[in-house]
Length: 83
Image (tube, rainbow, N blue to C red; front, top):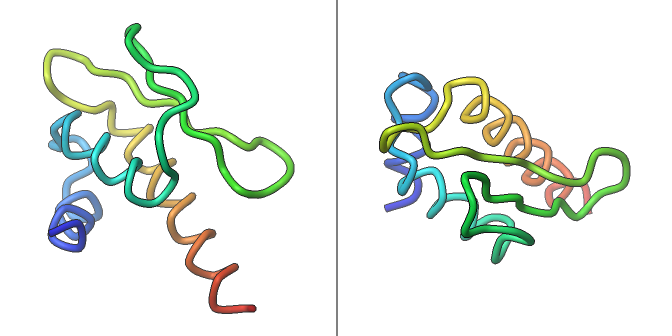
């Protein structure tokens, strides 16, 4: 199910529902460090800028945040392959 959402995220980052993005983030990054406000913040397992911030804007995710999540997922998958 998540792979289908990822494909859609890559095809149309401006047309992703916030709930779908939140679900993908929970699957890859675990529970958010902060949620309940207008933002949900997910921690990353690496040093540097260790978080991804997503916002709900009228039921949609912001396109630039979708791209940030995709980059973080790609980085996570790459680090897992390198092990």
